[in-house]
Image (tube, rainbow over the protein chains, first blue to last red):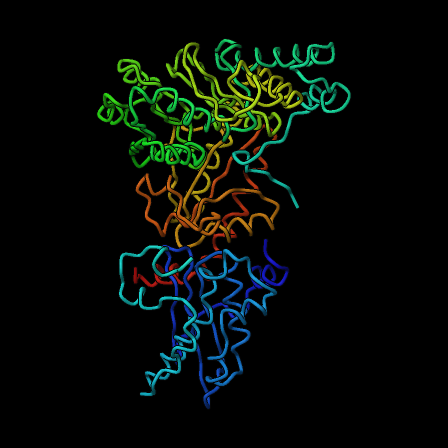
Length: 154
Length: 392
């Protein structure tokens, strides 16, 4: 079902953990859907010097988190904003179609962590319509009755 | 690395004796059981012998057995066939909320013919309360379907108590016994049902061979249009090799039933006791005692079923899960939801189903392996981190 690369990142995830003094934290997904990830970032001179994550979810969700963290470390914030669910899936050698939307939340969680960092600095968010790719982030923020049909558009 | 298969609810090995019985009919004995020549009649004789073996397993008459290609087909024939044959009497159907998709979906499909499907709730152990059935029986109820044992949570339903009410009202009562027939004693007279589905692979027969038992005098409208096989009740040339395999497997299941049940119950109870003893925050699903001998199922908090399943597989262990991520539809199990299981907890589903080749050593390996896997996955779970910090 999964590519060798997905299995490698699932079985040996890179950068698992929390950053106690993180500069930004982002959280995406919902345990009700079966996938939820929290990203922690450290920023120096507008560059991601460290990225860590914790993920509850399926094989794809864990592999996506691992790959996203690997792709992000060392990038400037603007470069990191260009990481998309599609580019993460491409780097993983593809994801099963059924997994693409629900489990592929790493880029979103990372972008949220970056915006969290900028907010603390009094800066406007970098995320805008260009990173809107179909996920209804607001559904989660609103705290509606959690249901997989709402936050994870399948 | 040990190889431990604990997914017998999905598929079973075929016993060597069954393979031996089937082999001649796979190759050289190829007569069509409906043909009048000696090739055909030899096949017919063996099909009829198998029919008797299958009937004997469930305490039925051979003429009441209709061979089908799968449990799904048997359930479709039961639900659609029994509803349509009785539609002049009414169009109300009652099914338990935890039925298999091969019962619920044909029942839903009947809506286009004007039928109404009503679901019977279950308690937190997955048990149907017979009084809930009684309360829902109406003048226009034509069919009740409650499974004998649930494949996801293992619970065995009180069929005889339900049958007392359906019989009193003259309503046809079907049971999907795919997960149970061949694994626990099934006697259609004692159960009091009118129709029962069973599948060969669930008792170490071949896949592709199954049957619907219909009590004499109960009519079901055929769902396949074609020839006059199976006494005009199921069209299509008989799967001779498969049917012969099913017959042999039924004979062996009847002969070895009590021996298998005590072996599997001991292993099951070792899992049921061993997992909560080793892992905190685990909920056993289904009924603690009224359950299939080889079935142990859990929801493990803070982690997700598919990642558990993949890690167990990498450790040589095959299991099932009914988490949303492991389902094609990405939906949380309707069975777990019907028992009132919290959606987030339902994602941690893991289902162990034991078979006759399993040993105590297998179970102990799984207990040890699972503990490590759960710990690893929890270490990377944000939900577990919150739990530890006392946030949630």
